[in-house]
Amino acid sequence: MIPESFPWGDALPYNSAAERLKERFGGRVQKVSLSGGFTCPNRDGRVGTGGCTFCNNEAFVPFYTHHTDIDVQIEEGIGFLRKRYPRSAQFVAYFQAYTNTYGDPDHLRDLYVRVLSHPAISGLVIGTRPDCMDEAMLDFFATLSRTHFVSIEYGVESVYDDVLAQVNRGHDYAAARDAIQRTARRGLHTAAHFLFGLTGRQRELDSVWQINELPLSAVKFHQLQLMRDTPLAKRWLQGDRAGIHLFERREEYEDFIIEVLEHLRPDLPVERFISETPPRYRLAPDWGLEWRVPEIQREIIAKMRSGGHWQGRKIS
Image (tube, rainbow, N blue to C red; front, top):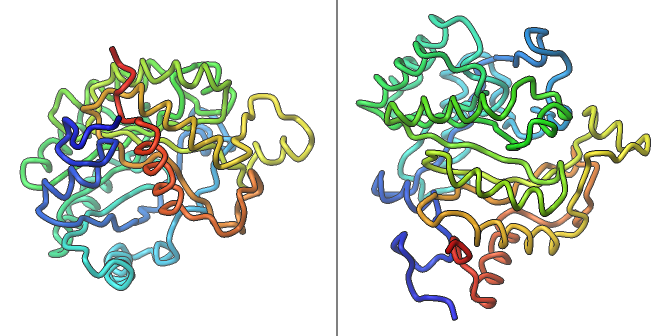
């Protein structure tokens, strides 16, 4: 039997980061995706070339980010979101694509101060890599966080070094753990995302215990999708399936992520537990052309409620 309420203060069977942000801001908060025109060190040759084998940044950046002027991006992004989500009360700037602390430090500081000067922007979410966050940049973000919401979001993807090497990340898990610890010590909101589908199911489930040990403010989970024109998709098309463990059916992933949530510590807010790629980019798996993230989220929540599952239930 599922409880009527949970330690996180509402009736959802998982600790929703969106709800925690609503509490913090006093209303719905929407992320405005922006592009700073950056690259990654495993693309430009510093630690590798070709980028992460699963990554196609074009698959998740909005149309308006193709403008080079950041103010135009903000205005068009907010306009788009206000039409789509009329109840949105506040907006935070989300630098998601590529590595948003990989560049000239003066340019980075000027860019983020400029974005925060926009009257409609209440905070920053900075997507980056664990090996691209030095002490000076952390100090800068800590200073900004005295007056604005600032979240540092690390792409970790896996706790296993062999998996990280296999997908050409160019760093090991120790680098991720170190960056997360240094960020959290400064009092910054610290998030990380992990990708399921690059190793066996039990091994991925076992990784939750290491995630639980990280001083995270929020976590994101997403399932492996093979995106066209990526090295991983090309391997798959050639019949090389080593290290590719797709969730072929949506029900398979729903059941798996429920198991993950049951082993996840209950005080860790979850930003998302599934991701969506536009069909024109997605090669596999084929879950049907019509599925959308909100629909599957509702299915997962319904399964959790009907089956008596909730976040942290299996932590003794």
